[in-house]
Image (tube, rainbow, N blue to C red; front, top):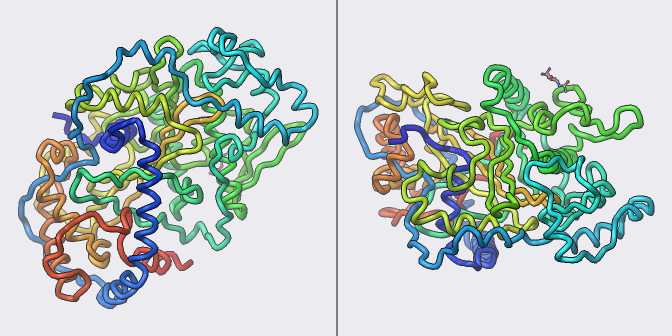
Length: 524
Ligand SMILES: *[C@@H]1O[C@H](CO)[C@@H](O)[C@H](O)[C@H]1NC(C)=O
């Protein structure tokens, strides 16, 4: 049995599958997102306010005794319920299946380029045969390839060069830059209170369109977190940061895209300048220093400035399948860059029961078709003692998971949410999986309407194999009795309805009143 929470890319990718049963993935997604937004707008406004007023009136939590009890363990966001597709094609078919081309987008972007840049862009029309014969080799560095070599997105090296550094990724991807977040203060900042709890498990709402404003959310622990991640790299090296040949363009794109986001979202803290002597320089007013972009590998630029994890999956021209080629992963539990680097999607998933039979087909197809303008976000969660960020196999923290400590204080137990995004890069065509680990004391659930009852349901009635995979048994003797009491309390206070038929909230991945609570805690 895998006794660790496999809390990164492999889990999210595995769980994607449940929601992508047919070829009409994106349409489903769009409809789902639209509906959920409408429901949210129409239904919850007044309901939320009433509820929240009641909740906050008894918000100050009363200290209480501990109880010992045992309970079941809950499922992780993995739901291997899907039927086996009986029309799975042989993998060879993917060899001829290129990702959706960025050609048209490039032509639009070209209109706003300078005359000299435009001159470097080759013939606007490309010949399909010339393209398929000149796709960049898997392990080749794009900077060393001829000008008429193409990425799988039908973009030539000449065009990549003409676009230069920090091209406008909002135009190239179709994902708008975020609004500036003027009221944001790093000293007080908290990420939004994600509570991605779902019941029943097999509904289709956990995969959402990325909200462009909320991709990289900084928290008040920014300085400490960046330092912690740098220490993890000092200590573990290739276990947390490594890259294989051929990932150069994808890493550059991913890093530039992230820095552009930060500058647009938090202009009070971040900016990019360009000079003859240094090229592009990223200025960080939280750390009070600057990063000279060309002096560092892109993953190191991210390590220095962005406390989130990134994994690059690239398409191999030999078989059209996706392989993990570069990663900066400081928040993985039980796996790491070293244990997965170089592997194909299906190899990465081999520990997951039934992956081959139930998921491989849809996952490969999803990767082959994902569009750059349709990034997605979702959350996966677990319960942890303290705040474990990185746990290589054999880490002493693992021991916590094999026993129920008799004197475990509630205050040490945290919800860990891995808030994840998945996107296609527009030039290289690589797929980037990205996530941040967010910790919240479980005690916070007490004044969050419906949350105690919902978590309780999942802990008690989640399906057994998933519950073992999710691995929350080690804290349930403390968490469950408290959740029971809080759920009762909320019912008595009229915050939740009596005998509420537990189901995923319309506010998911939040809860009624979350914005008020969040603003109050942050002070902005
Ligand atoms: C920025 O400052 C932090 C904290 O002092 C330090 O660890 C880091 O190396 C600096 N980064 C650069 C690029 O100088």
